Length: 405
Length: 86
Image 1: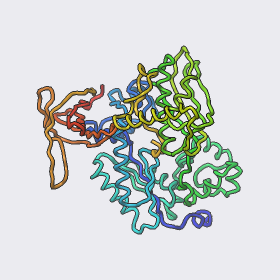
Image 2: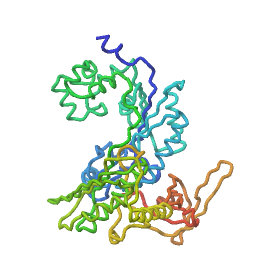
Image 3: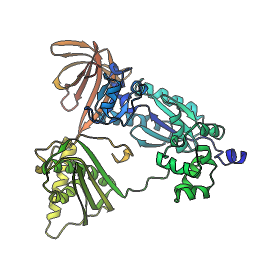
């Protein structure tokens, strides 16, 4: 047992740190508006009862209100709860501010999401706990006294993430070769980041009841459970070896999805949504200096399903071109579209060629000028006449890699 | 109660060149003066090439969101709230 519980674990010092802003959006709103501090606040996609809660303040969480609930459910528990809609610019500002602070401590800082950063201290001498306390102090001074972070330290990003979840809010926890076994004893399988209920069930039916059992599994046993390379990943993760910090490979597809507060009831309204989604994916594609050969779109609601897929030989270089390809394919319909998605795939390096009659060159020049005007005067200054009467999609924040935003 | 508005507002600012700190100290809105008690947050954003500074402040139990357009140096009051639910 001693062999299994200690000598297999990474013997090096913890050099990875993970910071997580506690109740991110709600805390930032409380920082901005001191009158909200100490009150039950939620930030939701929409203010009405059906709006999905994106963040709940510490006070709301104490009442049991959780992220992902509907506003109506929270109002049943706390009728006086304050419901706010996201102020994206504020959150991005805090995200940039936090990154600036972290870069003073290490040059290797990776934004994992809008409220989460991983910091690598490899090759940097000094006590990481002392650094973590200095980071917390600087956050209080530079970003605001109400904004707190939970910090986890570990030999790899995975264990640093597990550690950051152990103490909330304003926590500081380290997982290392001396305490990992006691910590694994206290955790459930679903407390491990990346293990959902389905995977936990799969592990349990194979006799793996808790993280300690999981740790003791041989690579062969894990392979028979996962049937994939994930078995090796889990084997090394649990032993504190880094396998999650590989440079992100170029994306194979980009997608943008939008749930509509007011359903689209006709072709014109749906067209406007698809236009905004095309611009979003087009911008991401443009930043990668790629052009897309494939595009798919989908709009759905109660008993209605509009979708299509196109492959274009010459590649699409911006959102306008993507929109011009799908616009003629959007049919007239009756019903209510509640969700819309646009995805692009099959990328190749941007090197577009014009056509012999110069039609494409003209289109590209026009859209380039339109993009420059929008960049100078703000998004939406110039837009296609086809969406003239429709409302714009609000600027939204994706829950994932912020580098794409 | 929270109300989004878009009204011009008069703002008195203080710039401390020793600390390089700037903060609004008083506003006049609807013919009433409000002495700023606390600045909760100061952030910026771009709309195209235009830079806007946003000050989230409180006075007399009221929250004000003040936006400075650095293009023309005009101030706008974009939000008023009392910290209670709607």
